[in-house]
Image 1 (cartoon, rainbow, N blue to C red):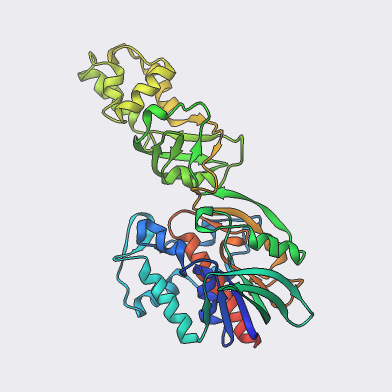
Image 2 (cartoon, one colour; image 1 turned 60 degrees about the vertical axis):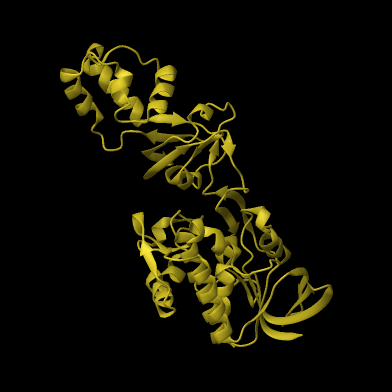
Length: 393
């Protein structure tokens, strides 16, 4: 079977590339349905992009690599596509955009765009041997018990990272990169809950509060959630992309920096109340009890000098914790690391050393923040590869 382009992966990036790559496109995926990670995203509503999307919201060994694709296919372009398909949407906090009805609307839209472009889709298809004869890629595919030999001028790898293996995530993209001599930045789980081996937060499971969480100078002001095994919540998921094993995070439980002034004022009118009782008016009671035991907080509010109150507020603003690890790929929303951007063209997403070979989406060493950024990278990088293939045809 001879085709122009084979795309491995019918996820966000792969479907987007198929819609723009021109004629002769075949998309293959091992799953029973396309866009499975789209389907489960955003609580089933798909946080499909972010109004504040910019290169500053992405992590990579080359922070400039993502600028070309993101600048040429923006969040506004994707919003326009969503509007063209009359999919209702709404904005949540921090510029996050979600479908009003279902994430399946985005999958249906992408499938329709693929159909309009004439792309074929083979599901429940596995990829075997891949080679290159100098002009075409030779790929062995297994589908419905039959082996198919495909020759394609272009090969687009959009098979994602290692996150959520129960959905079939694998290291296929990295193996293909290695097969053709492209370096891979070591992958790690990202946007993932943090764990503590001593189960210190087990009694706090279910407690949530607003905080500022910082790692390596990057801070996020969002909610944190205590779990049976450690810490989660948007702010924690965000900083998980910035740390490696053995590195600490800093939690500020008083990000507005108003607690010292408030406690001094309350000391004048509620001095006979226990310090922990007053603190529980500003932080969850179970969290206050935990900190009281850990930090030795005792006495009435009236017993606390200005110096003691300032010291307490300083502790609350710089609670340093060192996780023992993460929940791993099982719950990680994305994979940090991937195919080294030094080996790819930022304009086309094509491999510099192998003509016709492209890597897009999550398998590339570009990781976005929580909140629709990774989907935007999928749309932008898929579009960039599709445009490059179409113009080279």
